[in-house]
Figure 1 (cartoon, rainbow, N blue to C red):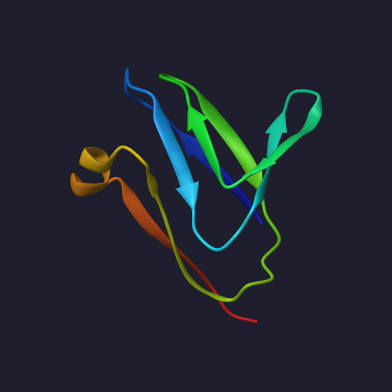
Figure 2: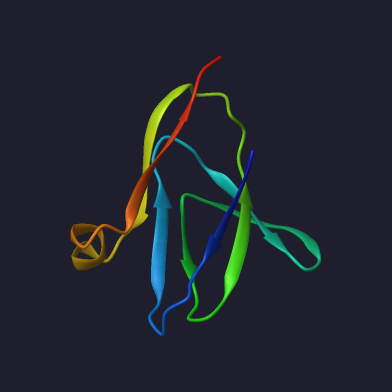
Length: 79
């Protein structure tokens, strides 16, 4: 699966996906494997992960006050 994260703000957002490690996509192709990645202000990035852990998984900004303000969502899938 591929997730695209867009940061339309002027702040840094360390984005985390529970239950999975993902491969960061770079212009050169495949980047490092992580479970948290910083989306820079005004930038977008894509990550790929294997959908091999069915369920409902929280993805959110690790800045607590951003999560409390609603910067989180659920990634859900079944087998």
